[in-house]
Length: 96
Image 1: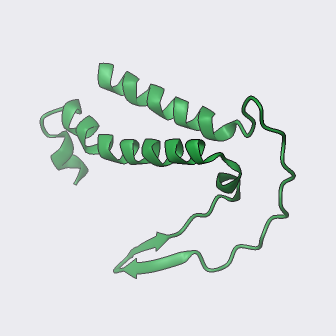
Image 2: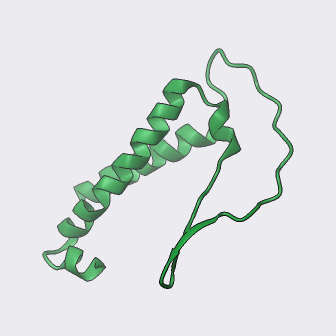
């Protein structure tokens, strides 16, 4: 239960950090016109397809905010099997 709460707080922090376009001391930037989406499918292995997602607003972040977003995304990937393993002793096996 405690791990689920921590994961929820980390996820909430990541969403808030990326959803707020302005930070103190920064001026609002004009948004670029939306580009038409072109083939975002990068690779296909069997029935599984891998897509590439580009967020234009990521470029508007400061280098420190970009690094924070990167490391928070890596942390959320790393915590996933740990959370499943702690749900029950069969959690990770059931996920796979």
